[in-house]
Image 1 (tube, each protein chain N blue to C red):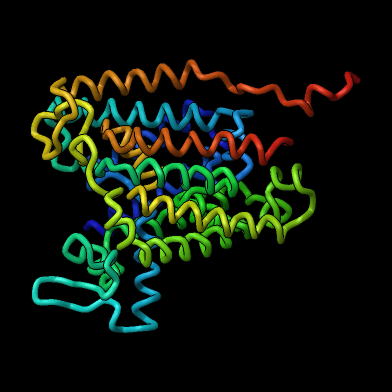
Image 2: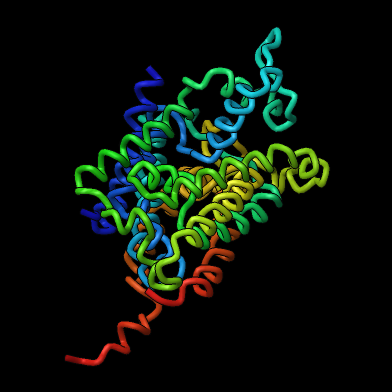
Length: 182
Length: 196
């Protein structure tokens, strides 16, 4: 079942350290852009094109930093993209080992039920809108909870601290106002 | 080889995120509304442990300083943080935990991912406007660490030894993890329950 915070924190810290030791700090949100690029490139093959010294794109964001993102779109079997797919495999294995979330919980999390009753469509709408805002914000910030807050603060990056202050300054009041019960 | 490492480290990360309850929106929201801070304590401890191991390892010459990757500081980091925090509190997911939650079978996480793909696409289309606004221009040196880390390609905000500062802050995070209480708000519903 769920680990206590001491064991859980040690394990999480060890994983973040292992990533820096062996490869590079962990980050996730960029891969939403890469998947968008892969989908976009499948629909319109001109989105990402090969150049003499790498890749570029008709989209300015994919083309920035000498086509770094365009290159990942053209080669999905890269470290960072495979990493996120592997995260899903790891979470799936853990879920199986602990016997699953239960069908009620998979349909509607308890905190939503406690505050808004049996309204799954409302929950899915909130999750959708939340996802939109989270990823728009993460891309504007250049990272998310993993890249900025965890990896960034661990490395004493100024940007990690700025990000964490912003994220909690918004998240705590919103959560307190929106979820009063449960 | 790097693909094998991606598979191993990624799977470990996903496994641990699920084991600390981070794939459960109820756990995340109760952390953010300050009712159950166990996950916060785990995150603080993790940052501290990661920092101590990394800077300690670098000082001992066992960890390659070249693996550090520091992101730029600019005003958009704060604005983006505010946005992410808002969506995080609404949904109970952040990018990594949303992806993992979907893998554990949560239906709402699929909607989060769909919204996320559209949000990322919206940023890709509006990026030129942000770029020309100047809000993406580096602040205080951009890609900087709080102290100056020997051998690192990133500049220091201060001349303080980055290794020692990293170790010190790591210890501080561990201490804070222990000091933070399990909850900051009494649960009104629980208190209102009559004694049997």
